[in-house]
Image (cartoon, rainbow, N blue to C red):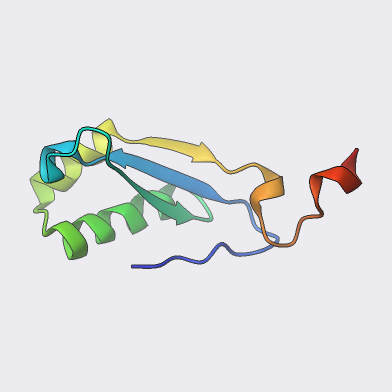
Length: 85
């Protein structure tokens, strides 16, 4: 699944360690959303569709996740950093 960042809206990322699924200790899955709830929902859908996780696995992985707001300079509509100095 590919997600596109929406311009002029707050953006959140849900970062989920998926080592228990893939066996790769450094692998993480990232989902985007315009709210915390939307980022979690996108992550849940991705876990189910891509990794075939059941509801219990999804709940456990979501508990291990972290949600962060993406800085404004990461959005497509923002000006380059040098212009903001």
